[in-house]
Image (cartoon, rainbow, N blue to C red):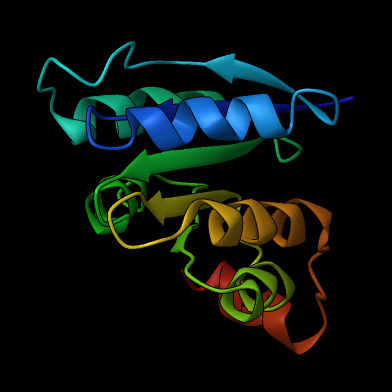
Length: 141
């Protein structure tokens, strides 16, 4: 069973919980918080926490959820060995893995419907990096 690190801010908490429930039998999640939607927290704190875990191994993957997906993505992409992609469709989830070797998917709970988020995660986690001409480009990041 693949281990996935997952984290959210207060705006992404409910979608994070729904993701864990939906994929309970498929993935083993390590939830790095936050633990409720009532207390406002700072999304960079949760992004940084998750990125430290994902960066430890090239096999690690992560899911970050905030209101738009953008804040988490910006915070995550400041880390070496991290390529976080804001995903809003299965096509961009697939391409972020195929061409960019993204290792974190970020989702916007206020902008992405639950079922679309589930489909994006499924595609993201099951798509392998294509390598080839994309490898040299990813190295430049």
